[in-house]
Length: 237
Image (cartoon, rainbow, N blue to C red; front, side, top):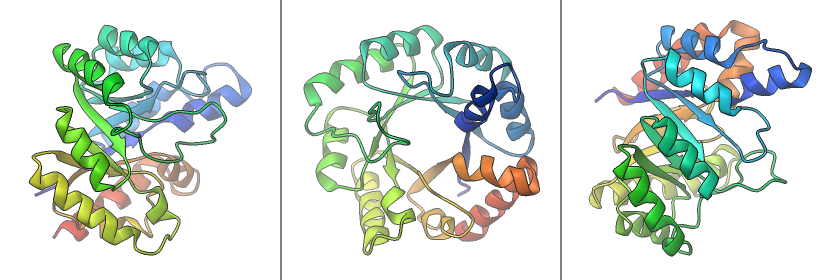
């Protein structure tokens, strides 16, 4: 089966915000990514609005026909925004103001009382909920118990070369499938390390952003997306 590629365009907004103004435009880049073969667009509306802003999300929703995956913290503000915009999917992620990027997976097992009603409300709004978690059996089972249809496995430790992390991801993907969860993966994936992740038949979607936006400086975004898709397809075959 083919694997979907979601392209995260957060760092287009990071570049825009460094100088102010409107260039480069995240919506324009999202359209270019879709034209190059992206199956969907991922964006993280952080509480501090350090890159994507509310108006970017609104414009994106109006401009593109492919699925939007909204990464969001488990807060009342973000819940209200998601239910108002109604993206195709919402991925609940941990968020700390001091972090440069997401540093680990969500503690689902420790936040069940908070996450349960949030998942229910998002689902009632027609939004497909995913939980961004480490490949920990306790967290995976907790996600299934809360009724989240999707998990996204955090691949950051694998991308940084932690010993045994690939095996943990493989075991986590197997467990997710056994529990009836759709499994996605992302964080820190590149041309050099994507193949073993893409080869996991249980993983249905990869979400990749920073690397593709950075590589676009060297070879262009369409070429970067096409090369990533080619690597994913070769791994799948």
